[in-house]
Length: 442
Image (cartoon, rainbow, N blue to C red; front, side, top):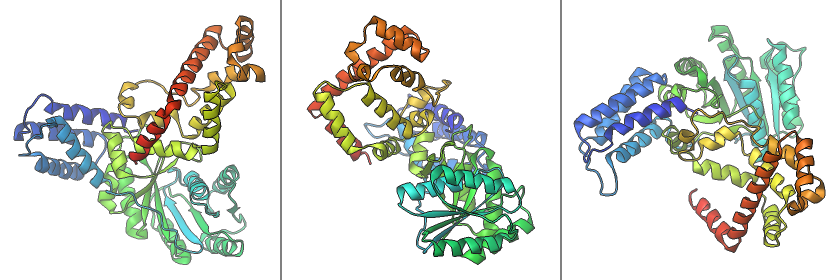
């Protein structure tokens, strides 16, 4: 996420390394490099210029604190300005209606239909809502089928009528169906536009006027850079939408849209899409994103994801097994499944401070655990419960059954034993202290 921008900002801020005091000369040099990095990320020239001018104003004349180096002070100034540029505070979603109505808008290919499903899944799983998806794209039959497929994946009902070619009438019918069947959130997926044309913009404005949504969200492909910002402005002029959704942030995103869009349309980024899976959705936190852009990671989001998958009852069982030295491969496999539910490995690594830079250029496969899982699944139930029973013949059979080498089986056993020892050491309160420290970071 924003790897190229992060690298260039890192190089720009290193200009101050070794200086004992921030001066006008070295600030100007750093600001010039920061502006160049922003422009390369497809940030609007005017916004980039105003941003670096504010950074210069705050930096000039400041004395370095006794415990702070000039480069560190400059990073803080840049981080604070980035946070403000992207919106300052995280914005929630308005669910005050009964049912609450969310109208989705955006260009074709922006990921709008998929994100409608992700949002429905988010509201169902994390907000305990009962959402209904309404298919109002009458121009592309595949869009209706796609929404039904998405709905089936997440267990959310989809309202559609292929015989009805009036999107306004469809939206009204979907609202009536929701009221009559106890749905408390309605997400209306409208037709994607190939371009901003008057006829299509009038149509979505008519849908908005007919259903009076609590939230109108504009979905934009973050990989389109400055074009995304220009399109957002055109939509906002007609719809006066409530917030922005940035999709495909897991791809080769330059960052220009995320940084510029709030300043141009004065509407907050509310959600981001971080992958293809239905749970790859995050509330947008400007301060956390600024941290990630500057290579500081996002530990708070990482802890939150871990806590979502953390099962207290299961943790107590694991603790008892560790204390009795009965922690086996079935338990290990269960821990792997919980990690996989937290999101893509690349995204998780990006949340760890410094990990993104250390792993630059490495291809982090989401199936990183598949070889481990294959080896464990080739073990008998007794072998998984009693790893110490694995002799040479058993290892040979497991290697053959999993399609891996004996060396890989031995490597897994070594890692498992090391992890078991570490977990045993943490039983004396170390684990609780670690969890308390993580909680305090929130």
